Image (cartoon, rainbow, N blue to C red; front, side, top):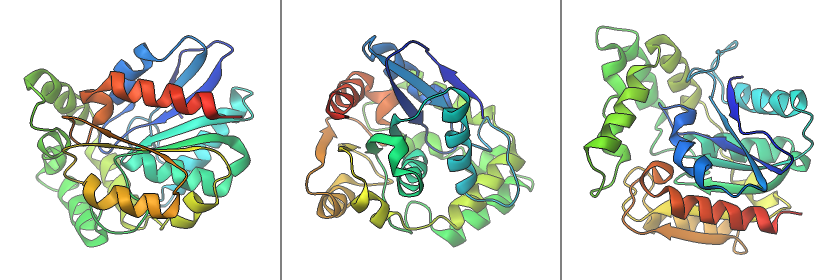
Length: 251
């Protein structure tokens, strides 16, 4: 699994990105995290890392666990944005002893929007047809809030345009069969951060945050003013501050 590791002896912070982007979603957050943390920004399978076998987000969990093993790391703070949040919660459910703290950003634990199974299967077919990568270019406008300018839109578009359509189709099919991770969140023994952009359209905070708070009433909740879905790109300082505070609560 491809990852950008800042290195050092600090507490590892694994950063899992949104669909259909890559680890660069986290670049500005990584630059702002304190020196006593070790950010590791991962490319998910099909979005910068190789796909393996039948489409499943379990392959992403496999990859993160193998990466931690390869780096000799027993535990890490795990933060996931959107699709990365699905993977983070699945990881916490499968290997809770490896997750020192869990951050779910602009995501949900229930099956359904923004990843309706039938819609994701149709997008996979479009990616493999005449549309190619254009089938997911609406992620640029869907992901950004009303205050995001052309520079951010260009960065998002560049990430998407660099993806391989067939690999992105694999991810769509994995999203179509993703599991509910509500119980994984409920059972996680460590501290939890729930973070949303104020103007997040795919996972609206007025709906999704109360759902998650009902599962984890002890979680720290943050709504980032002015941001859309891609909080790590739009408001990296707020995200970095929230992650640093979460890491401080990890034991």
